[in-house]
Length: 412
Ligand code: AMP
Ligand code: MG
Image (cartoon, rainbow, N blue to C red; front, top):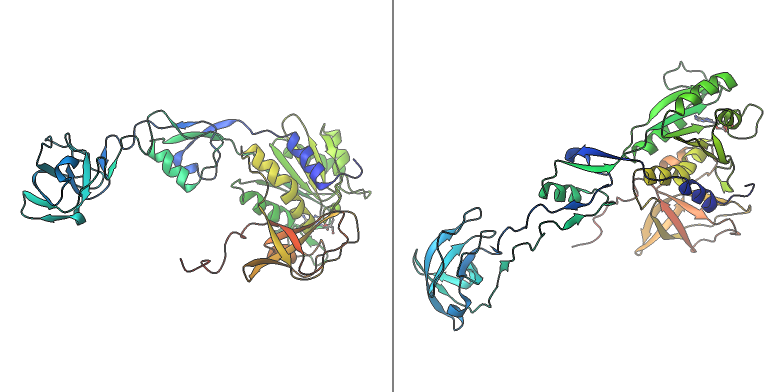
């Protein structure tokens, strides 16, 4: 407990968290959610053999020694049903997606033909049986699972849901999240300006981190460093699935968060993690609520959110991929590492000769929120490292926004 690594703490958090229950949501609101049911096809698609081309449906035997002359017996558009059966020496003009008529076993594209009149066409090349015909059920077969439970709903998945006419779907419920800041020195966003106070940045930075996951949290405000007031505020927070409290989790005489949580029945699992920034970092549970005691320093609070809260919230929402994507990059300049804690250095990412390069965003003090505002990633320095030299390979966790770049990435 005294020397808990980041990985061990993460495992401790994830071991106590399962996905929440299911709920039915309308198709318009499914993007970014996780399916809690298998979605099955409600029809064969296409519903019959259809033409893959604009051209002519014919009998392949008739054109085996092309060129050949055929009689056109009807026009079949997408949405039409064929009225006639194609006999020897005959064909039907057919559009992409239209049903292939009885008697025909192949389609030839219009480019390989020459119109002679409205009712006669010359076929210039031979085609094999089934040429340019899409088989009934080729895209999906009635009853087959097209999206399994656990699928993250992307725009493509929304399209699939519409394809099988699902106006609503069962997805995992999103956690309800409360955010509470603590500290007598804090000044709320709408409080009058006082040069001696510290603006409450954490409520809003955490709010935004939660929002980026598609969840709208409730801000409970600022609790004073006074046990009765803190208790009342924490009690409100314990009504939620997840309570994020920042500040007051260290061991100072006015750090009442931990004892107050314990007095409210929260079972604390840990309250310190061997990491920098973010040393005082607590986690506890009740029957219905997960409580994260985040450090007061704004950068520490955000970094701890990334390591512990983000995977927990994603796990609750049903995701199996709960961690930030990591990439390997080349370090732009030396970074020192003299302690035995895992360190998270805020970096910018760029490319040099197709190699990702990570550059630290200036001063890394845990109170310097600017470093986090600029950052595209968190470079992870392992606890055992003795420092990393420029040019060495490092692991970087990507942050929100890192998935976009200036250039299209090539001349495609
Ligand atoms: P604490 O963990 O309460 O000792 O706070 C550590 C540092 O973070 C102190 O300098 C606090 O003023 C600062 N701090 C705590 N909460 C916040 C907050 N909500 N917004 C900005 N800074 C904070
Ligand atoms: Mg404090």
